[in-house]
Image (cartoon, rainbow, N blue to C red; front, side):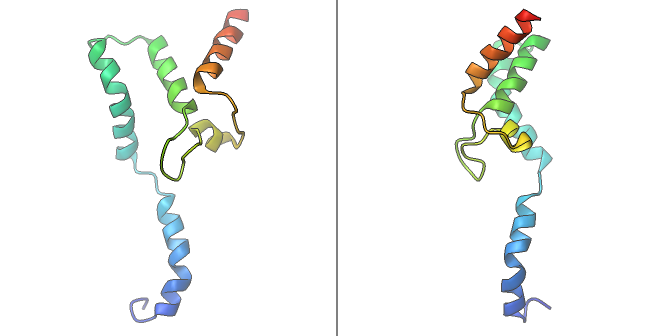
Length: 102
């Protein structure tokens, strides 16, 4: 029993906390997206185009976190492991130019 075994508790505590940090809470992700997207939905009277949603998805995946353990990283950097030197708007411009050429 860990309650009476402080040494064992101290041995496994870092592993347990690390595992708990890896748990993704879906409701918090949805609320985060909702809080970012809501002002745009209100301004557009809920008439959103697919092009807007695609731009929003790109923004969300390429913006840098400002706080927390993900500070300074983008979701795409964490997914791919490749660091991006440019801001999301520069990446969006490149993507638009690439799509115009094809």
